[in-house]
Length: 165
Figure 1 (cartoon, rainbow, N blue to C red):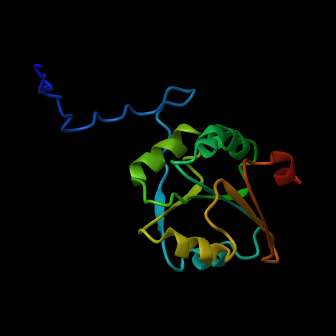
Figure 2 (cartoon, rainbow, N blue to C red):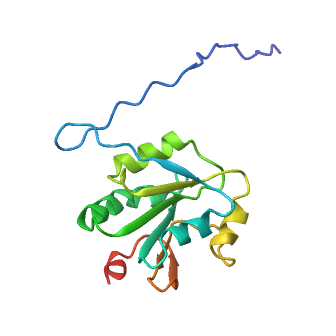
């Protein structure tokens, strides 16, 4: 009985990804691109200090989280409707993602001007613990921090009526 050997085929390798096309807003001009700050050890306390005595919404999301990506445009609309709201977005993927990909997702969703951070390093569990010792990294997670420093957090997609209250 003759055996057949698999044929060797050459698969072309892409040596360089194509450059993304600039995004355009409704006026046809390019919007500002989101700036991403690294979120490492001590960043949670720095963020809390920076926003002390200001009601602040902190939204933890990720590029690897399908519900997070699905709701980003809703967050963009919310930010547009509430331009004076203090909002912070933290990309909390368990494995660090490229800052350009994070910036592109935020910009596309209309969140280019929102303060944005991204987990850095490979020890996300330590960062989850700094934010909340009981947090295991579930995404999305939204945390409302009151003027008095108290906070309320929930896991899951945004409850916009609750946020507006």
